[in-house]
Structures are given as structure tokens and as C-alpha cells.
Image (cartoon, one colour):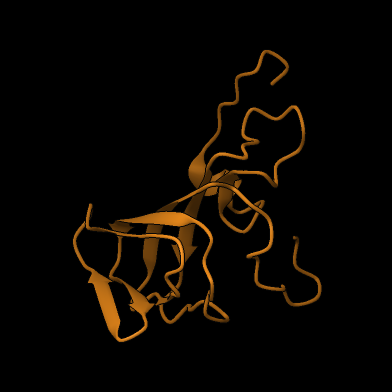
Length: 127
């Protein structure tokens, strides 16, 4: 990694940091550190859901379904991603939450990468 190149596996690396592969939360000097964008490889068991709604979102987001289905909820509307490659994009200020209707894998890209949106973890989990 000292040459500025990182090679990894999304499935393995995601398990180390709540699914997040790239963003402001990676260590200084790590090529995966970015203030511009965050990328997550989300592997969700059936029934997994976001612990609380994101309110006052300050980023733009893209979610692409790898396998699923996966539901994204917005005020007054739900979107179900059903086929590989289905995606949804939402902008700043759009409140949202999500539910894995079946075992799902979703690639999430958010920009910019800013602190303050992580849901507090139960004690004993890695931050």
C-alpha cells in the first residue's frame, strides 16, 4: 500500500468497516481515504433495516442493486430494486431509510464524504 495502490476484495474488506470501502473515515495515507466520495459494499441478510431514518441528508447518493431485492423508503414513496443493475439516486435534503426484503447486496456511492451520518452501533461493534 506504500505505493499509493490498494488491491482488495469488496466482500472481505466490507466486513472490516460496516461495509464502507472508501471515504473520509479511512486513515490518512490510505488510498481509500476520500473527502469527495464514499463507497459501500452492503451485504444485508433478509429483514435487515437501517436503524433510523436519515433526516436532513447533506449528500447525493446512488444505490445499485447487485442481488436482492432491496427497498429504499422515502417520505410518501418506496422504491424496490429488484433486478441486478436497478438503481436509485436521490439528492441533498431527501430523507430516507431502507430494508433488505430478502438477502441483498447493494453498492452505495455517496458524495461528498462528510462525517455525522453514522448510526450509533451497539456496544462491542467496530466503528
